[in-house]
Image 1 (cartoon, one colour):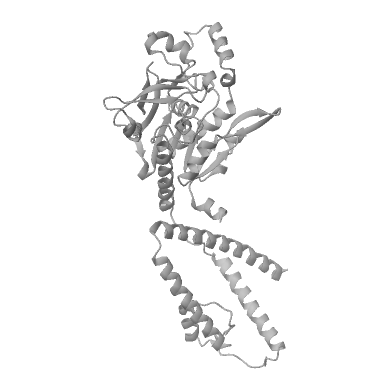
Image 2 (cartoon, helix red, strand yellow):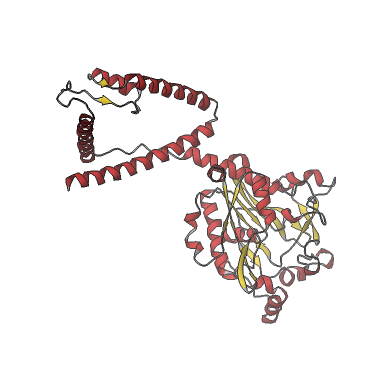
Length: 423
C-alpha cells in the first residue's frame, strides 16, 4: 500500500539542515513542516545536505513542489551584498553574536538555489519559510541585509525598532507585522484581524532579511521597521491551477500556544494547505500534459526473426505432441493452427484464424476461457466507467509504461533465442 501511495501522491522536496550530534553530522527537517505536508495530501521527499547532491537533483524527479525552510546565512557571494556601511569590527561582532547562523553552508546554498531556479523555470509550486524566503529572493536577483540590527534598525526611530531574534525566548518571542490587503496572507488571516487594523503577531528567528525585493514579487507584510516579512508572485499564484511562488520570513507552522499544538491564529496552516493544493494540481496538470507514446514496433529484420522463432516453436510443439500419442503423419490444412486451451486470443484474432481454416484443440475448455475473459472485460469496463478522468489517465499511463517495458524485455529475449538458434 505504501509503495502505491508514493506513486499516486504528489512529491514535495525538502532539503535537510545539518547539525552536530555526538561529534557527528546529522541531517534533520523540522517535523511541523512534514506533518502539515502529509496532512494536506502530499509526500515529503527529504534531500540530504551532503556533498555533491546539487549535481544529482534529477534523481529526485518527479518534483511536484519544493519547500525550503530554516538554515544558516546564505553566502553573500550569491548576491550583490553591500557591506560598505559595516566595519570589520561590526562584522566580527555579528559573527560572534549569531555564531550558529553565520557558519555559512555553501553546499546547502547550492542545492537550494538550484531547486529554487528549477521551480522558477518550470513553474513548480514553491514555498519558502525563513531562510527559504531569502533563497527565493536571491534566486530572482534580490539582495539581503547582512544584519538587520546593524543595517536597518540603527536608522529607525526607537519606537519603530523591532527585535527579530531573541535567544532568551526563542519560541515565545513575537513581534507585530502589518498585513497588506488583497494578498493571500490577508485572505488567510482576515478573520483574526481587528477591525480597522491589519496587524498580526508573528514569531521571529532571524538576523538577516530581504533588503531589495526581486522585481517579480509583491510584499504581503511589513514589520514596524519596514522589513518585508512576506512576499509572493501574483502572476504565479493560483493554487487551483497549480501555481504558487511565495516566501514568508516568519514560521506559521510554529506559531502555537504555549505547551499546545493549537495555532495562534486559524490562518497559520493556510500557507501549507494552499501550497499542497497547488502541488496536487501541478501533478495532475503534469500527468495530463504527458503525451502517450506509441507502442514500440519491430523493424523488418526483427519481424523476420520473430517469424522464424514462431515457426520453430510450432514445429517443436508438433514433435512433442507426436511423442505423446498424436499421429505425426496426419497432415494439416494450409494455415491450420493448433490452439491450446490456455491461449489468450481476442475475438478478432479468433475470427481471423477461423477464416484461415484454423482448428481449435480442446475447444470446450477454450470456449469457457473465452467466456470468462468476456465477463472480466465487461466487469473491467463497468469499473472504469465509474472512474474519473484523472484516474483513467493515471491508469493509462501506468499500463502504457508496463507495455513499453514488456516490449523491450520481449525484444531482448527474442534476440537471445535467435542467437542461440543461430549458434
